[in-house]
Image 1 (cartoon, helix red, strand yellow):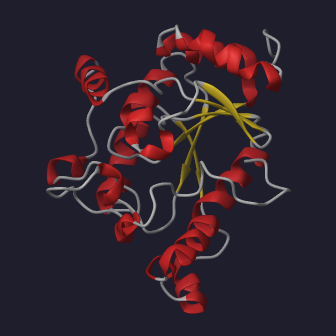
Image 2: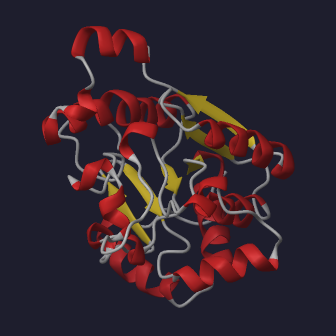
Length: 243
């Protein structure tokens, strides 16, 4: 049951400005009070994912944690996911595409090698549709994410809370810097993803992630520099979708 009224869409900028003045923990508490059991947390088990997984589950230990498994993740990611799930006792909910990776390649080829259009089709099949299905099956109307303004140009103007179609998105650590992330991980004895030690600053699928090299920005290490977002935080043009 919600203990606080849902923010009216027109009042979201005001509410977000109020939340901007609060620490991350209080933003998470606000989300749990407002959305109750209709709130989920997503994770990619990426480089810094331990921060949000720890931050949120200290306040809401039973929250559903949605993990989108594309079938193309690094072996280190799967091991990292198992380790953090056991350590933090995550209520993990794994979702995947409705068509296997092998069948996708047989029918469409390697979509990630087919330019921006191919990438967007790949991301829709493997990430957007499974996430939308997760929201619907779990009865969720709100989504906690670990997006930060410092991560990419596409994220510079994110608010603490905003609407994406019919879903409220809450970003508790939106203004955090890399130093803030490091200090939180260190304070709580939490690990970075294992590939951090090999120069990766952002990790997704094997075929669309690369270590950082001289002269690159972090966002250029994803999707061969063609784009930064995987589709989950972009408009997908599907009127019947919740996200």
